[in-house]
Structures are given as C-alpha cells and as structure tokens.
Image 1 (tube, helix red, strand yellow):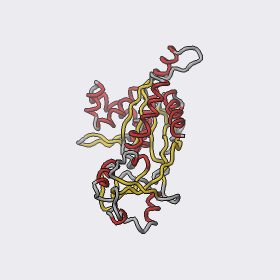
Image 2 (cartoon, rainbow, N blue to C red):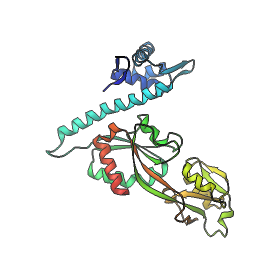
Image 3 (cartoon, rainbow, N blue to C red):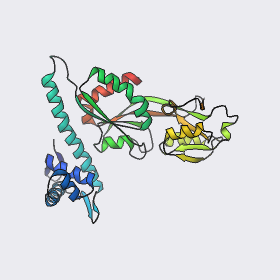
Image 4 (spheres, rainbow, N blue to C red):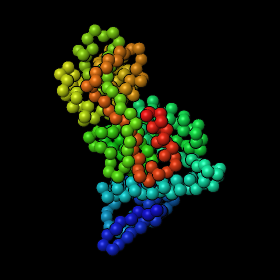
Length: 304
C-alpha cells in the first residue's frame, strides 16, 4: 500500500519507511525526537520528510525552534500514513490466521483498536467484548477513552489512531468525510436531581463539556424551565456525584444514568424529550477487515 497523489501525469509513492517517519515526526513534535524514536539520524529524518513533501507536492510540517507541527496537508497525510501502516499490520495478522485456520473457517485474530467516549466504554463495550472474546479468543482489544469534544472518537478513526470509534452521531460537526458509520442505539435524556427534593427545577443546572449536541441544545433552549448551566464538571460521573450531594440538577443521557445511585432520582422528559444517537465509525478499509467486521456484528447483536 502506498500514499498516492495523482497530478499532471504524475504518481508519487511513499514507501513504508517514509510513512513511519511522517507519523513519528507528527507524534513526537520534532525531527530530533522522531529520529531518536526510529533509531535514525536527524538528517535522515529531515531528508525523508523533504522527499515526501516533494513527492506529494505539499508542505507537510511547519518548522520552528520548538519543533515541527503538521500543516493541514500534513495532518491529512499523517492520517493516511497511520491507516496504511495499520493495514500492513492487519495483512500480516490475517495471513497468519488464515494459515492456521481450520478448513472453511475464518481465524479472526490480532489487535483491535477501539476509541470510545467514557460512558460507552464503561457500559456499552464490556458485554460486546465479552461475546467477542468467547467467539474469537485471538482478538486483542485495545480500548482508548477519548473525550467526545471536537473530533472525538470519530476523529481518532480519521487520524488512523483507532480502527473503530464509538461516537455520538448527528452532532454539529458530523462524521468526517470518507468514513462509514452506523447507528447502534438511541438513548433518551432525563432529568436527574437529588432524591426526594421537593422542587428540583429550582436547583441550578449542572453540565459538562461533552454533553449532547446542537440538536439537543435546541430543545433545551425551547424549555422555559431549564436555566442556563451555572455549574460545570469535568465529566458525567462528576455531575452525577454532585447532583447526589444536592448541588444541582442535570439533564443526562441514559448511558450516563446507568451509574445513578439511590442518592438521585431520575424523571423522564416525555415523548418529546431529546435523544442522542450512539453508533460506530470506521474507515472503508477497516470495515473490510475480519476483526472490525466481527466487532460490528457483536455491537449490532448486543444493541440491536
């Protein structure tokens, strides 16, 4: 596999080592650090990057005294580089598995990189990974919890750092172009407040940065009983804890409320209340791999 740009009758191909250099520079933030991580000299790394830039016809890194940072073109190239290098790894794992497989059976094995926001990693993934381990013990999941802010889990997939992401779908920024997605569940929001409180709507509203998206915020704005959030917390677990201590009320989705204790009461918002869609995001090439296909099957079976 190569990273290819087609121009005026020109095809530029980057070799695997050139791809590794691009990734190393992006992740280490400089040529010297990249050279140390790869066991190369700084001049070799610099020469490789200049060669890649010449082949692709774009400046990939901004050089400065404090290091090197990817340009927009560099971010795109590094994302492709990670995904291509990942396919080399998958090719080896699938070839070895096929060599050991019984006739008429697929041997699904190898590392499976998953990015997910906190409540999905805590509540949605464990039963799925349990089923996956029983069916395919050769799969080795690696789960990274990422904040669902900005690019979020979908951005980890686009950047080549995850094979599949569990993300909130339908948010303002949408799924990055070129990725595949599928809805796994829709979860309703509910009002959570201190247990037994006589007038929970009189309490201050608590919130956290990852909570919902523009479509839910529009519903919030249409409700005259919902005040502006005056208390912010780092994540949904902290919001639940603070609500349980009587410090406010919150509007939270079902996955987050699975951690609710007897210290809080949960009140539904009715059929017109907001919902959020949770789904998977992956790349077309990862969607064709055995490990990701197996994971998607179990995600659908568990949450369908």
